[in-house]
Length: 184
Image 1 (cartoon, rainbow, N blue to C red):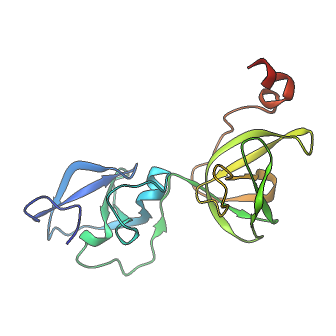
Image 2: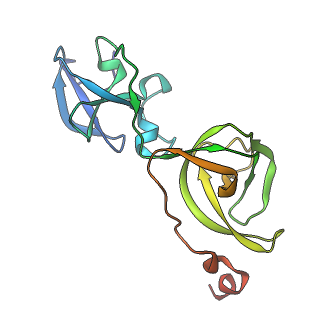
């Protein structure tokens, strides 16, 4: 039984391009053409999606509609063709091993991503690295393998863009120098 149905189970609730349920429904049995695949986490940019388990996160974009998606479980027949992924998150592939850091520029623990791994990133920022005595550009990863909290940053120099929305840094290298941090 799909979670996205109305109370009579005659209509399926559609999802918007931010991973949220809308007040728009499609009648069960309606033929839909889909052109992209995604999941609610990729649309929302977070792993904190309420009310659904991982099996119900997958969505398909309704063709010629950039903002409406239908849940996989609401489709009677699954798409047979390979669909292009749709995401609001940038994905990178590591060209070198990438160690995890916290927001203070300190090593997280012995967790890292290996060369060739692909990961979703949700932010781009400069962080002062005390060990190197310089500011470096870091990606914030969506799912960190680190056991320590808030240790979800990897050096941008270890990765290359794969697909998704391009990120812009939220600060500059000058913003994170020790002299500027002390002014705050």
